[in-house]
Image 1 (cartoon, rainbow, N blue to C red):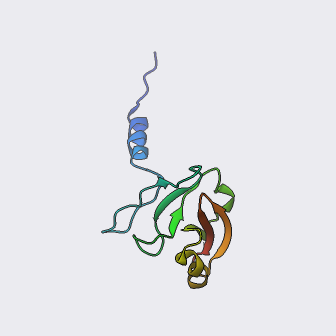
Image 2: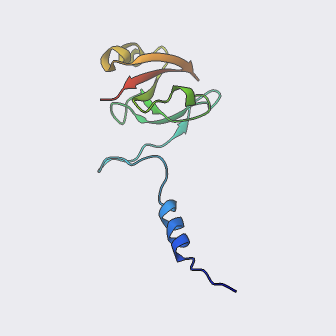
Length: 111
């Protein structure tokens, strides 16, 4: 019977276990916590976009948002009808694209 070394496979599993797919927060900041929005749960709301307490939040990938994600822009959701949603587009150069679960979604160009 031929023996194979399994340590390279075990090492790969350990390395991959440390990857959470969410990226990392800058030093000194707590990583954003994903939460479901009220309603259908179609949104994954992450940390505040402009600051940690910003009601306009980064939006993660779900079945409802996959078609809006783009590597050249951020997807951001602001509570629909809020003052933040009304001014967000003008301040950030964002384009409104949809409303889901009470959040106005915007695409914000990077760079």
